[in-house]
Image 1 (cartoon, rainbow, N blue to C red):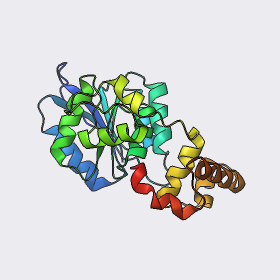
Image 2: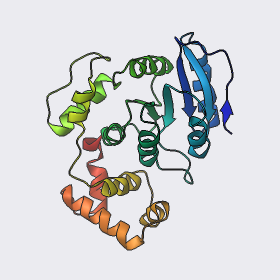
Image 3: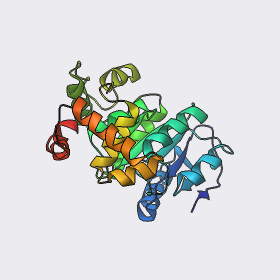
Image 4: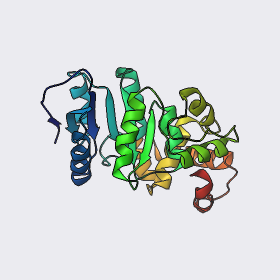
Amino acid sequence: MGKVIMSVNKSSQVRIVTLDDHAILLHGMNDMLSREPDFHLVGSYSSSRQLLPALQKMDVDVAVVDYALAPDDMDGLNLLKTLQIHFPSLVVLVISALYNSATVALALRSGAKGFIGKNGPMNELIHAVRVVSSGKVYIEPEMALQLAQLQDTTQFMNGRESHSTETVQEAVKLSVLSPKEQEVIRCFMEGMTVTDIASKFNRSIKTISGQKQTALRKLGLKADHELFLIRDTLK
């Protein structure tokens, strides 16, 4: 359930909202953020349906959002695009268990300014919020290198805070697949069936199947199982 957290808001504090459909994780994240004197947690939500209307009524600097919400909620990619369109000044930091280069690249292309994995240390969340709130892009050095290698571009500079927006954008241009094909492949790799994906995006099963096959062909694959064989190369 959504919650607006009221307290004195100092101008020097970073105003933050959080979004995650797992109550325990959300509570832990809120507790960690609330302990920082330079942070002000102004709201906490468990669905995009709660978050989006709330953002229209409050001033927020950074939104820490889960990428894979409940099955009946908005898709992570569409949520990022919605936030970018309706709240262009909002800085979005994604936290997700889906931590691979394909997902990170899609999130950054869709407006996220940072991405961290849920299996990382909690103090990384604090550091990442500070980095993105300062106007920089946050990616772990190892992930930055994976993104660079994925696109065969110049490797990122070392250091957590050294990645400029331009450098990141240059490294994550996954143009081989169309946006809809990317959605289908990402959902398929998350374990969803063609029928599940068709229902989620309100498309026909025939359309989804065709988009999946086109994507596989563009990736140089002949069968569904080969997508999982090269999954590590897409991370």
